Image: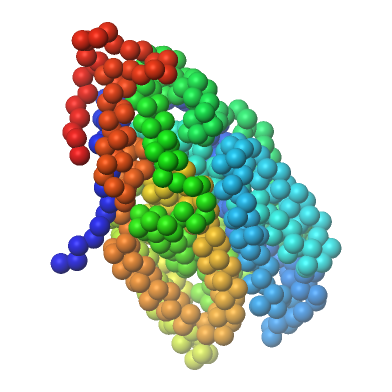
Length: 543
């Protein structure tokens, strides 16, 4: 039997304190208000990503888009069509822009805070969307999309971290899982806009949707400073009093004597102090020790799997796939797209609310297994459709089957790569390297997206349904890698996971600091108990 190292965690003292809180979040006014602005701002980051992926997909349904950016080129059916290689680059240059931003975005988030990083990224995206909407030629459109890609990276890195670092420990995993489900809100908006603009006979058929991409970024700019800064960022900058006030207001509803807040402060402060002692805050640190290398490798695969599991094929080239299934009318394609986006939002939200109740590794393995089976079924359906077409007929049953499996892919993918991506990343990486860790995921994700989006258009044109068979084998490899490499992180606070692969003495040091704070207080302004009087009883187990 294969033995898999799933990591070790600190004694879950704060987790037990959190579990004693039986008041639901919507009965806490301060927390409820903060969650509203977290949704509008940080969830809006993924709305932008969803809007872009569906935008560039639905724009391909508009003949004027192909005519203007393709220079009047026509395909074998005498329809306006951008050359497949160029179309792939137009689609993928968004990821290329994000790749260029990776060296700078994590540094900016650590230096200036999560909120200013979101503000900068949103401003960059507004500029990119305006440039995109008023593009005069294909080169200008490509540059605009690269600028959008730069901006989204600043927002994703800081948005995902801010949700995890501001959220109450009891709801943190659900909040970070919902982060990716908001992607589908953007998809729905782009799909709905396409229904009204695709049939416009002028270039406004593609300019209007391109310009409307500023809307999610405007929402982020309007709401980002209605949120508090990350307490972990403040503590890392020696602004402990500000961090304590934020935790008191939102995690204890104004109760300055809260044991939970005292324990959180002690745990965060001691963990960050220990991280800083053993870390030099550089990119090279990500490869220095066994623990960091293990995190790096797992994060590398998370990035690859989020873009190479068939989702970019289904998202960016759905029009081609619908045509292979027998659905050729633009009006039919736009409505199928809208239905799939609504279905994606529904199942992603439901999955995000329940998936964190299960072990992370198990859900990733379930997701990979289901995706593999769905792609096998979709491949068979498209093969049967191609056989019928080559024989001069049609096969409506195969077309319906292909469409069914197209819709079935969404929940299979969302169980793992959507719902758990940022939940898992913020749990996997300690504070001092969290921005860089998410940056690593982004660079490999964007590289994979850039590669697959370029290859998809060429491969579909060359080998049609056989291309899907390649994904079947690749997704099976994903399942094997998850089983062998992914650690288990469920059921702990971020600080209890900070030294997942490191020496157990570091975990003991953090747990000891929390116990000392709870029972005796410290010298940083927290309440102390009289000598000889023990603090509140907290059951602990020394690791």
